[in-house]
Length: 255
Ligand code: PGA
Image 1: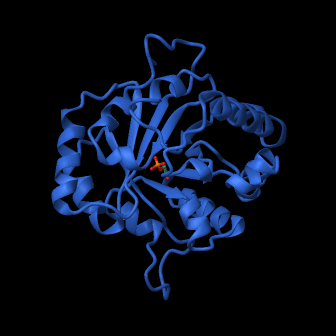
Image 2: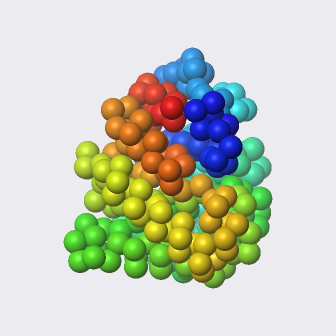
């Protein structure tokens, strides 16, 4: 635990980089260099979400203390699912994590709560750790439905899971993703706290205490310290800024 975040803060800070469909070998080599140079706070767990074709390359070239995540995987081991990636394939190349339920998967690829829940359950069963994303659209926020939406997305996953040990939840308000409009620390904290209370009441008190909830949506080197100071924000899922050296500052945001 960080010296400034002693015993009362038992959840290890976890920062994910979500590279999305970005990068080339050349750009990835640059990212690997700044990640290696760090220095990265050893009290923070770091995971990078890499396009499928580069996963093995990145896994083989990053130090073992930095986790590597697929950005998606299917709910079957193998078979006639053209274009999909199996959790077993991720495991086979020593990738230990997968990001599931990202709002881009939900919105652009029409993934439903139910499919995402199946994928989360299956990935966990096959031994992956999962970053499961939830979050409301601007329209849902403006009509006062933020909590309802986030709770329902979480509940859909809960209905198919017994063990949450290897799950990190990423709360990513859709209106804040890639828009430069970050949720204020208080807005993010309010949803994180409400979600933790929902989990305590409906899923399990111990799970609520231990589960890490990341915030995602336009996190940058400039706003990460303030966000990281909120008691229910246990890390970040970072898109655009994870491609840049400022990602190191975001990893080190918890003071
Ligand atoms: P952003 O993306 O940091 O570019 O807003 C976050 C995400 O989609 O995970």
